Length: 324
Image (cartoon, rainbow, N blue to C red):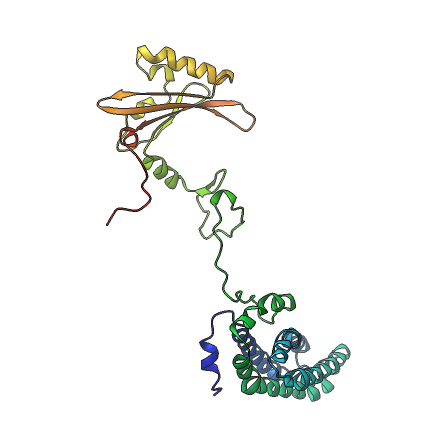
């Protein structure tokens, strides 16, 4: 057993040495597959495994261009000389095998593959025993934190890009400035796509039911087509109102005002009307909004009523939760 593995396991996620060991585990798997592959029996299978192994070039380049220069800074020049030469020998073997692959010379491939496999295994053994343990002892935390950008430019053998090191805490982005296209983490079955987002009919109904505002929607033909059935409506409604003309839904003394609002909205001269008054000891705020489509065509009116009694009493600030 490699006595250095427990040390690697304790390293933070994304640490360059930990990434080298994840890559090493992948290399071991590839070598086992390559050892069992028979190019004479299934050349395509062998060739795919071999090509996967040749991405070890990324590992070589990261060591040569990232790790070795830092080791030189700390006075250890051995890897830059000895291990780099080892890399070049393995590159020569890969080039030789690539020539045989082009010819599909399965006899030569079978003869030479063991040398490549054993060479890589020997290299990884030296890494385990000497290179990475000494690197951890010599390099400072600040050194390791400088690796990620260069490593990313060269690349890794791994299927998934390693996490940045040190870990990057995501900066807060205000919702109004977040334009990230995310993969949806929920099903869109039985949903409708609205301007922004998806909701099922049940979710829409619950949303409207629990809004602390009474909503009544009158369409472009002056017919009531919807109201939300909340538990604490300011003004009572019943299902008989659906399909009824708006002029029959208000007391006679206020009908003229309501019709004027509708006429002005339809003509496009006004977009909002609002009122507030006392009603049964509560302060009620009523707003009417003209509804228009993207071409500015009139599509009706929304009436919103809200009990603002408690809202009017607010003073100063409240920034903390007071549940406890």
